[in-house]
Image (cartoon, rainbow, N blue to C red; front, top):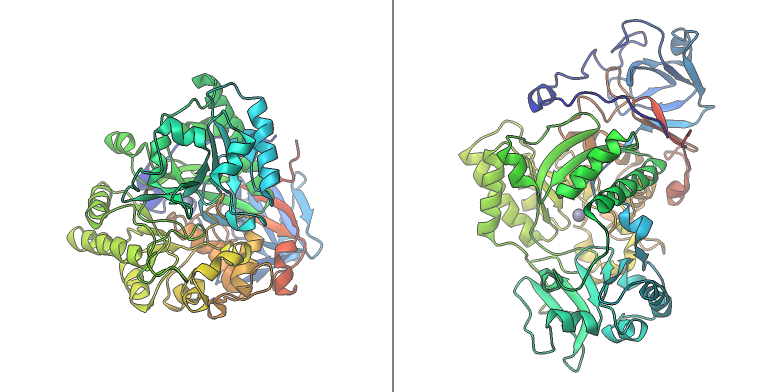
Length: 568
Ligand SMILES: [Zn+2]
């Protein structure tokens, strides 16, 4: 495990003013030196097919790195001339280099991946088997909890409360959908929470019923809150839980960087998660850079005078995060037209217009970026109402509030997003991975969903987002999905929204950097910027577009250090 030089935390002002890492003009001269005061570089990469994502010099063969930053970009001959006795030279042998990939909405934890019951399985019997095995090791009264369940990937579903009762009659059971908005519970769990067939649905959630009116097991959105404080979760001490969180973060960081990600935006951290980032970073085990949107700890940080941008180039505080409607993949997002074949189902709102206005005003006036989860067109409209209001009342030259997901748009919404400088963060692996779910929206509506092409056409610098665990985080799958708009069966969804490979690479790099105000320090291979890059076995421009996701990541480098493959 490499250890990283720990830099002092920098205040907001210096970073947002672009005062860090902006040495030199982009890539005009191979000999240009961003840092390192003219001494030979620490690292030289030569014989590459380098896509810089820098308009001043879009292609190169080689670059040099000193003190974790690119110092020169040019031809192999140019860069070889800079090499000194202590320079590490990487011969790319014609392979492809791009800036490191940036995922602008992800939920990395790693704790479930290390310790949880993975219910990403294809049959009810397989799910029952893993829950039964876990229950056998779990003391009475404690929860048996599954994660990564996906209703449409189970061939003999739907999963029902009675399936869970058969497998685990005595412990409370919950099986959380990978999308994060629904979960399935057994009869013991419902009994502990006092929920019966006669319990009404709350306004911001739903207890699914079967044809007889009995609880079916699935619970949506905020109706899941009835299980808070019910049953016992684990036997860990606070210190053990903290240690487990650090181990999980180190684990997921390894997985993310192996896929070519060098920066990942965490879409909602509580206090415990912030501590996990700190512990992982201080242990030298954080391999990717984190931009952390805040959920539970917002008030405390704001009261301490902290706001968006605080931190350093590894761990930085992002915006404050809220969620105003349901899910795309779990078919609960709030729309102006109903789901296909369900004329009364328009989806679920989880915040009112007044609540949205209040949280946006509070954050905006305290110099925080806001990121509000809004999938459906109704919800996106409500969020834009709030952004338009605060930007009129308290103007800001470059606030960049965000709409997380921003799944279903139309020309009016696109124009308002453009006019307010709002950053949408649409799903980028969903078309490919979740194809079977798009029948619930229909072909016509899919022409306006995950609308990367439309955002680009409106000159909106749209980034990409996996929302992992809801979507896979592999950025090459994302590029294939955005370029082809094909699902894993080859069916096209919204072919009008296709982007080119070049556009997909910009979405995955420089546009991602912009979503955290960091386009001056990352997102392209430019002298002076952080040396975050990926070496790919094959060129996504020249392979069959249906094969892009199979391109191997050969090496991932963050700040000039190889983080994948692991060297120690
Ligand atoms: Zn999310």
